[in-house]
Image (tube, rainbow, N blue to C red; front, side, top):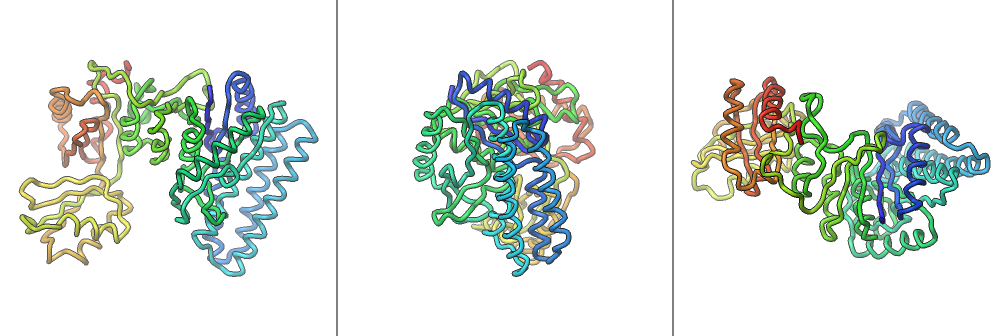
Length: 465
């Protein structure tokens, strides 16, 4: 098969893990065409982000301390990963070049005392640049011919929206397919840095946090891969949070649509845009553990065999949110919702859930706890006493979402859910169900969340999937 395999920062955080991964890749490459995508080594991007803030404070001492820690960590991992002196020396020379570039950049930035969005992308791109060289040279150490490439070098082209760049699809597809297929024809194993591309002027851009997933799916689409594997620290997508329900288990198979819903409701393994490139060619994805290779993980494809006996596949939660009830004389007034949401958008508030009373006298919204004060202040300043007569706030609420394609057209799911909630003596604050019927979501207080999830997990026999 032609496989694209992406590793997260945790899975390559030690020399022991790197050697295990590279041995596995060597074994796979004997019978498959492999392309590897890597994140930065664990905590590297966070440290570089911290350094960016210190530049504006002109805290040279702390910056030098953090840079020294990054250098020490990467050199230590590099030395322990490679036992062949020639390859080790070559890697150390390459790392030193990158470290010198990093120091020179920061020296200039400290003089100005400012990090722009463009220069921030350049700064945080160093994490992936370092990790791909370590992985590629470790593969060479195992006699597996490898070639490291940054996102820019492989041909990923984006717009100039630094920090959250958008892909230029046609140009990227042409560049990437030509570059990677050429390397595969030479029996080389490409190791590509995730998260990073370049705009049409050659300036480094990034896709935002967890963007390596997106890089991997872009590459899979460009080369028409047979499968893409997202390798991390979990065995796959779970039926529920194992910290809440000890009987939760790995889902063997879900559809793209189900996985997208799971991603929205608390699954952190996948970048929100990662599925977009796969849909055209219907390329399957696997969510797998880099530490438990025997487990094949969760298989995600365009369609799955829906189990009518178990219409609900999983239950996911997002705790610690705020609920805002907005009341006023909205009946028959056009553009009311638009004014409310534009006010929140201008304040930089992301609305997670929406529900409107059929009488049009109130709108309820759910926002993250960290956005709650900002949202309420913005609504009070701009709309209270005009369009809005009263704003009520409920803190510490949880979103619980039941997800499964088998719910579509199945009678009695909602009644069963709310009967269980009633038996737990829990009050439901808000209910939302999309027209696709893939997702039934409701709001309860944080204090009731765990008991309700456990009861629902047991009622729908999710531990037996």
